[in-house]
Length: 276
Image 1: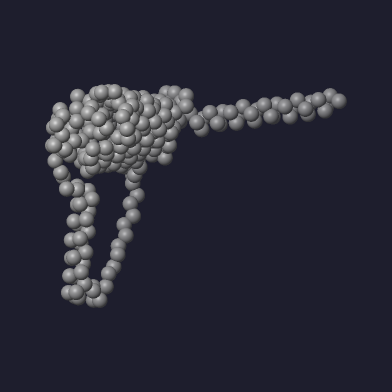
Image 2: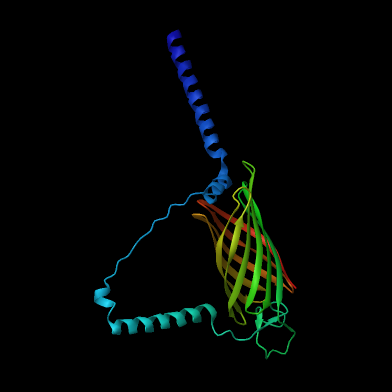
């Protein structure tokens, strides 16, 4: 009996030891945290590039004038189609004082409107967001359109992680072209640069697109996508929000998805905008 009890105690000790080792291993493997993993992805100092070469048979096509003519026509059509899609007709517009200031409309107005109008617009915006109990953050943004079709945007996005306590800052400067400037729809695309700090200290090219639809007073719907290329990785931002407009203020809330290197963060955010 004593021998049997000894075996039982020994087995319990092994199980306890294995449990402790498993917990220690799990703790060590997760101690790095998601933001530290994101920093590692975005800080890559070496990049492996692959080069591909394509060979073409110029004997068959290079000397054929007919093919050269059709190539040039195709390139010209593609060029004008691309410019048309990106820039449009650039019709003149004014800004309303704020969305729904004079009925059912968004930001932009024609010259013919007999209401107070503006030639420029400045918006300050701040959003707080959270993902469970471990992640939270803040997104601060300044948007200045010095003419109705062109503007600049400065933003700072900051992530915080509770365990371990790590933070990551992402700052961007964008030049936006407002391709769609209709009564109830604003659509834009932009290019610029993004800097990732807090130990990453890298800067890369960034681009974005966005769409705002003014459904019916006092609500509007907005969606946007932004990608910043950092080393061999990227910082991606996707937002889907609803705004409630009250004169120059608008209160917004919605879904935010962030990709930091290989780390994905889904969150809900709320915030406020003010138009000058």
